[in-house]
Image 1 (cartoon, rainbow, N blue to C red):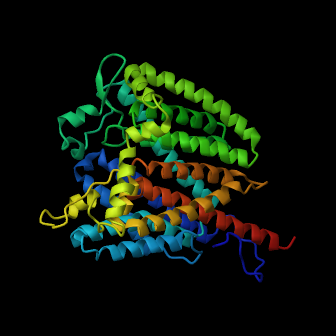
Image 2: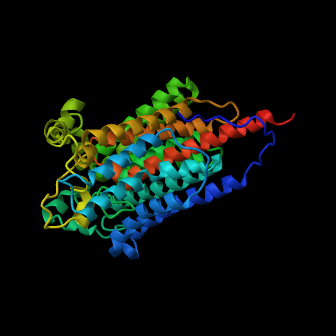
Image 3: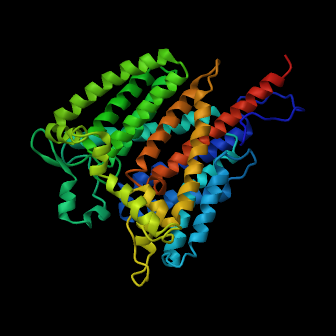
Length: 462
């Protein structure tokens, strides 16, 4: 497994605070994040009619960076397992029951685009300041998304982008099911935030909560602490109003993970602070959401407590998990052939294809259909190495600067939440999945750069 601290014993020069290699890394990492944000904003702006092209731009940029970024800084420990994933998918193209070649190649390309940051980011020498900039951009974007989401309910009919053509194509009954009733009796769409999908603001709410906690713990500027608390507060309010129970559960899992890592680190001062903050924002955000849409919020949250968590899941998304392992895995132990489900099949599939399209509501079903048990196991191994590496960074406390390990704690919690989301959504074939690999790869690269810097400092003359 790749180590984070190894360097030749001959060099003794102390590097500058901001090296040319770190400047180059900052350029690539920053622009990748900016492209992701702009491609999302373009969907709700003047380029909304070019939705498909904007999605292609988001994922296509990941592939472009994979071939453009150069460097020999090292590889992430999960890299080998990720290569195995791509090999399995490549072989699955030749499965007799695979989709037509364009759909199969597009699906493999989507997998590669999502995984690509794991390959190109560790080539770079990424500094701590780059990580801070990246997380600030992401936090600010999703905080604004949460604010807009709450305003869309507070001012019905305003601040609302055009509805996605994909959603409109599902029929009037489905569209109406995506609406909630405000406390004043007005029917409005679930908050979309900076997306064109009702309930889409829930994703921003999740990011605003998790990253807001990180900002609260790591920022050294006075104004950032209240801004971070406001972000967590609005993020939770947006989650309640978005009505997406899976994201509520994922956020809860992430919060529990943060608590667990802080306890593991014996960081009791921050743990107490986190407990007080959490109780306060939970109460205030719930009261705020109820004041805006009492009946809808109480009914939706009440459905999570009517039975045990296992029973609630079984009554909702659990059927898809059961179907995946009891029906699809025995029928397709080596996969049904890549490209037979999802948007790639919709975009590039053929009506004359002898192998009709299939349906996957959760990530586990998608893995089984695309590559069967081999793909599912290989992807899980890659995830294990990734989580284990991030956990190691989170547990390493530095006396001079604890921000890196604290962000490791937050990104670890975010990652565990994303893993929980696989039981409800095919997250690793989405932009969220790409950001998952990107954030973890950047954290690893920063930790490795920092370990080298510590080495040079130890080797430098007094």
